[in-house]
Image 1: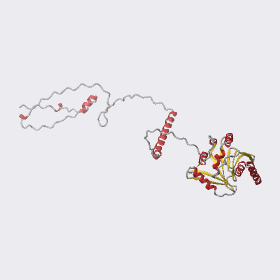
Image 2: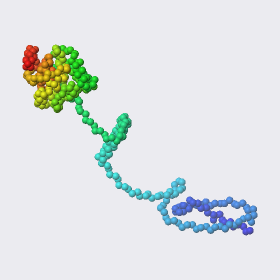
Image 3: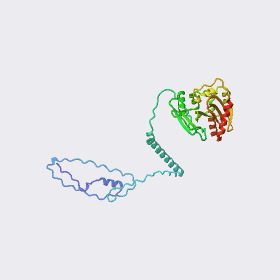
Image 4: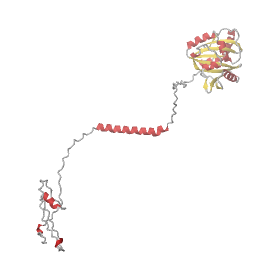
Length: 360
């Protein structure tokens, strides 16, 4: 076999990527170093050699269009690619927010924070302590609320200096028998002569009204009579030698109407209707004289002698008070206290004697 044709060492060129990049960038490459291959080991046999045909070297690519200049690499030797800055569109600046708008926003935020705090306080500390309300799921119609009457009015002042003593009787039951028995028991207690003792009557701690007193004592007044009087009354025991004599004082609403009512009542059944005030089983005579009048401390008094020892039915209207007494002496004491006038003992004795003469 013919000897292999050896190419001269000058025709062997080593290409690198760096060189290609420099060539593309237009940088003059430095002198390349020739590669000297090591002498091949002598072949064992020429028949084993195979002569390979060299592939044709492709022509170099045409130069690329010129690009922006690239500055040479620094110490590292690598090229630095310079990218032109991209233009960023500018945005218009925001307008300055007015001061009052800022203050409004801050105030609204403070209000919201305060309201949320109050709601949290109510939710945690107040609502959690409220008792659970039991709901009644019945289908019945709800009842309308009743209007409560005011009970805070001041009590009526019936006296100026009287009475000298006050006793309260709380009835065990609201019946005529219970009331009459309680009054008779209190009347049997001896007191100082010519003294007065007010009897306050209650049931379960609540004072009786005027209408309840009339019903329990069986005092039958004309129709619509009590509508002209307050619901308060004064019941007094006047102590005299013969025992206690009850006195009843009512507060008048219309004085003229009261005068008319009493004038009509005394002509009919006043004596019989008022008789339970005497607290005894006395019966009136079949024929009774008419009521007569006398003046005491310039106040007119109507009276009727019922033929009961040291007792008589008297009534008088002074100011806005209607006064019933079961003796003339009791009327004298009450009128002196209400009018503030006093009389001598001799005057009283003479007046009693004249009253007896009038009855005869």
